[in-house]
Image (tube, rainbow, N blue to C red; front, top):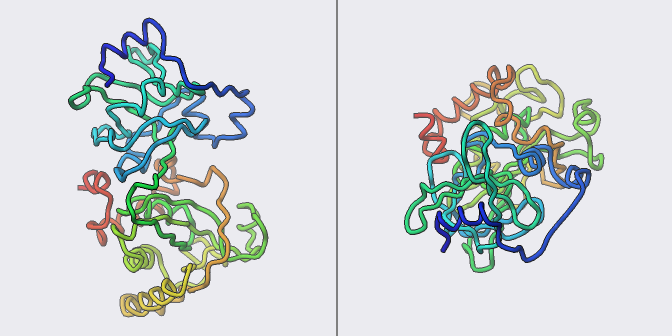
Length: 336
């Protein structure tokens, strides 16, 4: 087990030898990574506190480097530090991490990098829990989580919803307990791999949608639907507020007959909750195209922007009021 003295020794006298090395040009890294992944791992950036969903994920699994796939951490060493970044007490093996002195921002810290590809991960501090006393404070963007065969027997399920601008829908479901991943994109049209500009033209048939991976042991598909229908206006045809066009339609894309049955039941259940008739489309899922990187995590990255404050914030406030018991723990604490 690594202790703080070991970290100081590595920092001063050299890091443990890696099992392998991965070296790429800057152009190759830019091509492989999203803009945010590149900023964090190759330019030593830092994500905003509490901005990454992995802060609240403690299900069994392992974490790999987003750049080179090297095994870095196991969730058995993960803990809730309350700092806003994923925190671990130990790496998966001694030579998985390399350590560098970091004197930036007027502080004296120890930087952690992937020992295989030099990706910036975060920092390590001597204020963690016993027995190691270490806290590896890691950017969630620098990691990708993988479940192992011996992990939880629960399989994630998929839900695909459209409710107007996908920035709004994504922001809401990122705060729902049991949701492990939300991606913004396009579904329900005929054109292969459409661009945002093409979808906005209203000619491709796609709706702006989100695809959600969720744990049915923590939240049911039925409750996911209730949240979806209650946090946008399902009574306006091809329109949400000032956004008009078929790309902004209210829609539930069902992945099997059971989802279709539940969707129809929930629409009927909530029909008396609205003054006007629910016009939400229930359609069989065919294909989902992930949107461009700049549309992913839009609210998290742009919460101070005018659209976010004027349009998304009120929807989030409604979600928190109606579904407080369905919020992720850290989000719930922040809202109290």
